[in-house]
Amino acid sequence: MPELPEVETTRRGIAPALEGRTITEVVVRDRRLRWPVPRGLEARLAGQPVLRVRRRAKYLLVETPGGTAMVHLGMSGSMRIVNAAEALRKHDHFDLVTDSGDIVRFNDPRRFGSLLWAGATPATHPLIRDLGPEPLPGDFDADEFTGDYLWTTARKRKVTIKQHIMNANIVVGVGNIYASEALFRAGIHPSRQAGRVSRARIEKLVAGIQTVLADAIRVGGTTLRDYSGGDGKPGYFRQKLNVYERGGKPCRVCGTEITRTVHGQRATYYCKTCQT
DNA sequence: AAGGTAACCTGACTGC
DNA sequence: TGCAGTCAGGTTACCT
Image 1 (tube, rainbow, N blue to C red):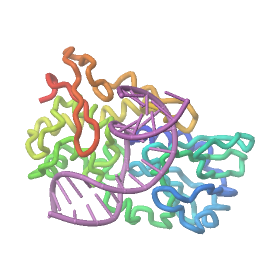
Image 2: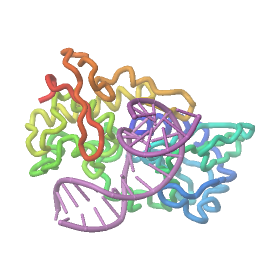
Image 3: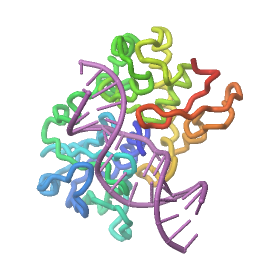
Image 4: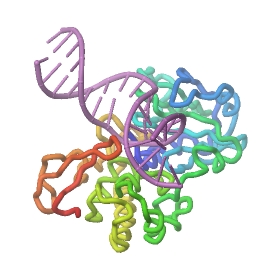
């Protein structure tokens, strides 16, 4: 489900319930997530005050003096703030209980999400260590994400430009929705080989990625089916999508029917007139 | 080294 | 109604 804007919206939603509070208890009901929830994670986290809730790529990092817990939402995960009286729903796999009485509750039908322990140095965790720069200014290594950088990484790459920008080792946070949307904004055909996009158009693509992600964050992300941010509200960016899930519908710019195709097992949408 | 594919899992929807 | 098939916002593991 969640790409960078949805994870960031979740972070902003749950941070007020966690930062400055102490985690009194961690309740894990189902350890069988993408990776099993490590034995002992509850004991490490319980009693810890939360310093910050950060985001790196699509990971939420809950930082405490005793170490950092990493949460990934996978395809169908979400987190929300509830109180102790709230009835459990199907797929509510773990709770972070705080000393205010608020509970941050994780729900994930497909269990592609994860809850892991990253210790004192999350930046060196194997799942984080090799990630590319953040796309949005101010975030980790974001000053590296430039036209020069994306151009250089694309040299001699035979994969499509869409697969290239969805590669988290190149740049993080761009998933299937926003890859299609950013390419539309840049006027680039998604099937073009990464190494065969002109330097000038690569520059437009960097801007397209940054603006589409920022625009989506501003309205709480994209709710397609069941996603909602930490406050339980859906995201409103769906109304602003130009191509994603609009196959057969007219391009908002030129009226041409939007085309649906597949890259690397994922649906891809584009306007064959506006994108070349 | 880079690229393609299968795999993890549940639920919603479509068509017979 | 039921059943089979398809698809879904992510990412790693494994094979060429």
